[in-house]
Amino acid sequence: ILNVEQSPQSLHVQEGDSTNFTCSFPSSNFYALHWYRWETAKSPEALFVMTLNGDEKKKGRISATLNTKEGYSYLYIKGSQPEDSATYLCASVKTSYDKVIFGPGTSLSVIP
Amino acid sequence: ETGVTQTPRHLVMGMTNKKSLKCEQHLGHNAMYWYKQSAKKPLELMFVYNFKEQTENNSVPSRFSPECPNSSHLFLHLHTLQPEDSALYLCASSQDSGTDYEQYFGPGTRLTVT
Image 1 (cartoon, rainbow over the protein chains, first blue to last red):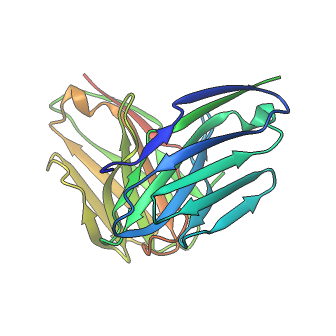
Image 2: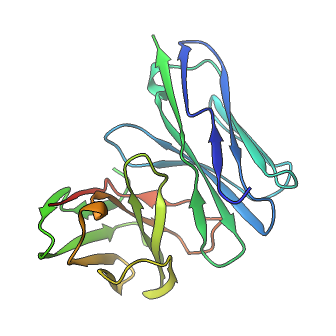
């Protein structure tokens, strides 16, 4: 993988459903993986910064895992709420200084 | 409110104009970034400054000229732009440019080049 990829591109879930999406990134020269949430008409907001293989992070109903050897991260949202509707971005950081590469994002819509 | 402000929020300019985008952070951070998001494309890193020194230039055309007079302010000077430069320009800051620090983004400037 040369670029950062995210799947699915978009997702529609019912309120209360749990969901997850994937970020795939180059595993070579890995340094860090960032997750951001970007709501419409707002600024991207940091969710997690992950650096260690096997790392798991949690913030409320949102959690993330990281596999640096195979180059993927999962973001999980438990019991989705309408306010979770946003685009979720991941960004891979390589060891070359300050090289941050964003994925295209997963657009999540939570239907009340 | 993220602590990062950008002005103007919207800008329309002709291809022969010269304009500047301004970013200011009130977080005491040492690193600042310019990103570009074109329609249907991922966020693209343009420039990184750490302690006022440019540490990354992601092959950006010279018609985009950044300036960082201090750790709190970042400018993007624009001249002789092309219509394909129309995009959302986001500024961000982080504690340091060490890339395990989360970034705080401004609201962006929506630029239209006519």
